[in-house]
Length: 398
Image 1 (cartoon, rainbow, N blue to C red):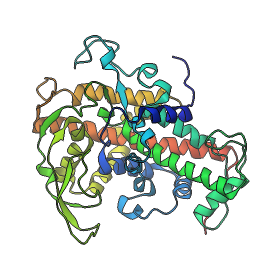
Image 2: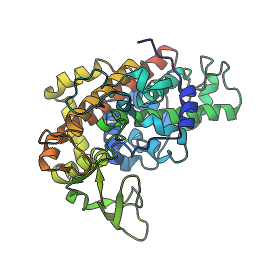
Image 3: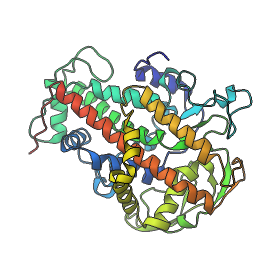
Image 4: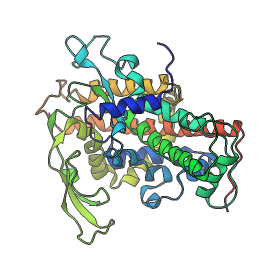
């Protein structure tokens, strides 16, 4: 394959015209995205944490989410109704509609895989989005950031930068305060998108078949007794895209008040977004925080050493080959684990996903969460290393 260009400006225009033609529910849900972000943040050096903090500033929900990265991890899902062009950047559609016979499970057709030039035209897919937002952050001029407000440092520091390219490819450095603020906002959004999309590409059904919209067309039976439990109401009211409804909530609007939520119906995609994670939290861990601490521990354990080495063998988000590989991993898992029922038959509309389906898939979900966090941390460390080499100084805060 030819080397891909960094074409987010083109991708955004194309995606805007696509206007999210094939809808997807959000990948992983809030808990999954926060877990990926917190696994990543725990692995960061202090320099990398300082740069993340300088870019994002103080987020109101950092303590609740667990880290600055986790506080923005689901931002890209929340802005999709306003940034319509971003919808197609959350997933990869493997074009089984263009393949004779489609892509059933156990297929031997070599075309039943993620082919970048076919399935990510003009970089409009989650793999292309990771590449392009990583490159945007790489293009940020090295910043000399001075003492004072971290956000003010960031905005003002751009004017003292080495380099002459802003995030939209302009060949002149920003001079006015408004230009500097615009660049700062673009950088904040780039980091938010990158954090989210690295999570997305590791959800198996976010690299899956076009014809069933990543499992959204398959309404299935899944044991949701674990969803009927006290949970924070931070996700808000009923959401038609996720099928999550608040059955009982505190009427005074207290975000910390418990509410009972039950999934009134499942499709295959939502099972992998939230169902398996919610069930694991309820039946094994008790809280999301306990689950992520367990996964962080696993990521550092000798038992996971070989897996981590493999995951990091291609961890450069700025080269399309690595995000493409991550997408292929997800497609492989989708075919083997998501689309295949526990008895070996193909999941179809109306299938029942029994306890054995959950028990044999929960480790796959957990490994994908860990892999996403490990790779996100590595991308951020590589960005910090690049900024340091190009002349950035270590942040000094008051």
